[in-house]
Length: 108
Image 1 (cartoon, one colour):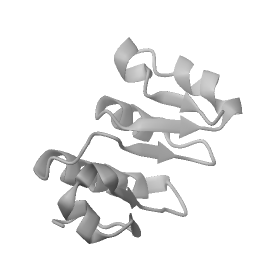
Image 2 (cartoon, rainbow, N blue to C red):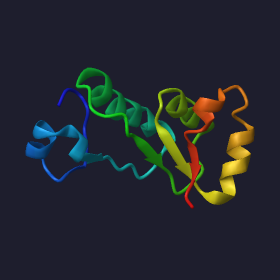
Image 3 (cartoon, rainbow, N blue to C red):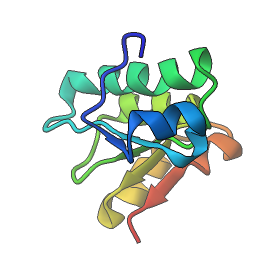
């Protein structure tokens, strides 16, 4: 599938071809650092080029770089952050629209 690389496709590629809304891609990164840029490509290619549904999430167990969060939200990627980090991150993203900020979520 283009340049995007995924660690898991659930349930399988046959389901993806038949009905993309019933398939899930999972891409795992051990460290965010610069690898978050790969996540943007992994998300953008299926959505913009292949027309897959717009249901993309980025989940971080640690505080992700603020620039990464900002770009994900501007691209319509939902970002889940640890509960204790949510308010601090949200306060630092004041330049985003309310709609963009609605994509920032707590774990719980």
